[in-house]
Amino acid sequence: MNETDLFIMIQESYIDRKYRLILFDTCQKKPELTKLQGKTCWTLECPLCGAKSAQMVWLPHKSTWKFLCSTKSRKNCQVQMEFPVLLKSWCKSLFLSYQQERTDAGTAGAGFNCPRIDPERTARAPVSRSSKSKCQHHTQPIGIGT
Image (spheres, rainbow, N blue to C red):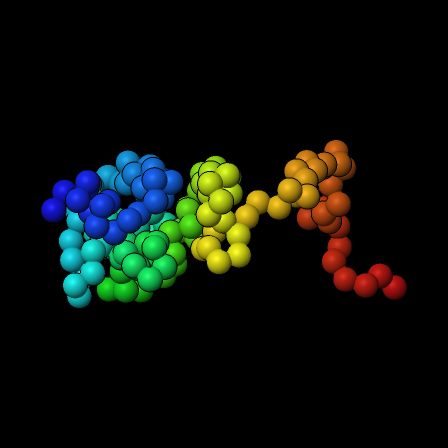
């Protein structure tokens, strides 16, 4: 089975496919298309912790991928999340682009696995730092003065 057959078989959205391929391009080892308990899945390295045998399983009832990090080692992050949440955890700016495309396509918001962009949301004001430190200097005594 090649990826074109997979796309037709599972009805993956164009937007999800686009961002999945961006994610796959960052993997050192090319992800492999496999079957897991009869379900279509990709075996890849975890983009969050680097585990070698993470998987993305197609969920036909939700029309999305579910990412599962390997549980073979406690060193692995062992996360389980749907594709949009993985994008948000992995690369916030990429998720925001994905979210915008999903909103524009009408596939975000109630009833979908991607939140709609809030039109009232304003950009966060830049954090201002005063030139004077509010931290206690290491030479100052600590405790209650008498």
